[in-house]
Length: 294
Image (cartoon, helix red, strand yellow):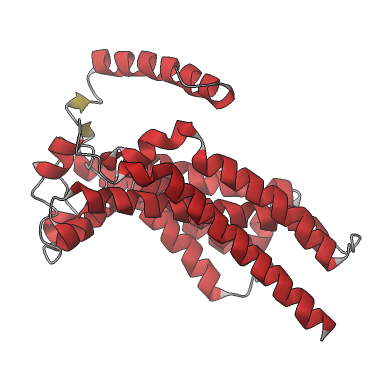
């Protein structure tokens, strides 16, 4: 009876902190619901006809090439859902973006908590279950809370078409969370399929998702397996499946022709200007992590 009571208290505390994360995100971003479409939203949403019909799969998975949706059919599909529910009313699109951010915050919460608990599963380490749970829960909540309300993420939540970034981030974190759960239950086909499926969906959201299999391998080596060789031996089929999703991304990029918003990758001048801009952006973003945005 005592163990059941203790487990029940832990579950309620976990649910309470997860609810606090949800409330925090809503309080931080509720004023974005009344925002209008701006900048690239016009070309990618208002003037984009490819997502107007959910049943038109060909149009959905062949987004307009000269927009931020090029090679990103999953984003186009999410816009189609918004359009089906509320047409071009921007409120629904902003609400959807906030829901994506909430999902990311909860996934990050779960990843950190389970990562901090990994030491408790080692044979030579036998801490008390309650203490282990509390020691991992509060730091995980604090990190997830700080991340979820950090002003550096404002653009990816409030700028509708930056859903390309936020939805990819959600699938990245869900892939990571699925991997952590699969490590706990290596015989689970459900978590195996969940991890690979979310990785595929991330590839269809934004090209940065290509880093996910590499990050998971590094994570495995550092926190679970202890070496790349052990990680490969233990979970080789999962890694084969994850790295195979690169083929799907390659098909999307080739089909899209690498033209997004008028920036042609083959144009050396455009590439050079882009790289210079990104160098400046990286320095700015890093500085914003430790101080106010100017």
